[in-house]
Image (cartoon, rainbow, N blue to C red; front, side, top):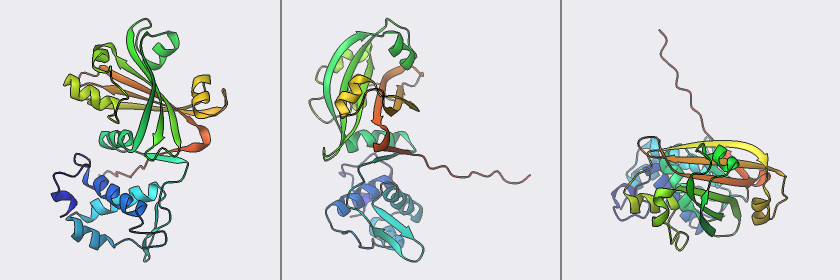
Length: 255
């Protein structure tokens, strides 16, 4: 049965190209397609899974971005690795892909407590100092728990605090717990990427050096009115993470 026809697929809800990419990624990890093997052609994948050529190409592009395959004109798609390199590559183009990132990694929660925002956190969250939030700290790992991806501090709005008493007891992402238990949905995510010195707490968790160059990614999850639901502050060791954005030309017709 094709990917598009499987309602019970655990990847259901993701874009079709991403569901295909995850299927191929699992096959590569299981050595169904070992290193050096050539994947089925675009036409074969289209026919096998009932997908368009555009969808298949997007799925293969994702595998290229992950460092699992290489594509050459006339030579097809060749497997070059069974797992992404240690330097974690993160590519997103939609909310669905952002949510997939939280499913494809594992968050180990190390602490959870209500706090009043201090001046520094208020600046990061863009919310008044002294307001109450639930602060959740932890370490995000690769899915196989082989490598640490980043140190995470999540600030959940106070209205959700009572719903998150068991956060970290299973693999459910925090945003998913909030959506399921509150009935509110994340309508938009705003992401900021910057370079900054690694704070001491993050350095200790990641085995790095406090003050060393680091990558800070702040994600603000907003409701339909533009109000904050949660804010995640992620710290990555500078040489262990690559953030990839693919931009395409959208030319206007000549007038």
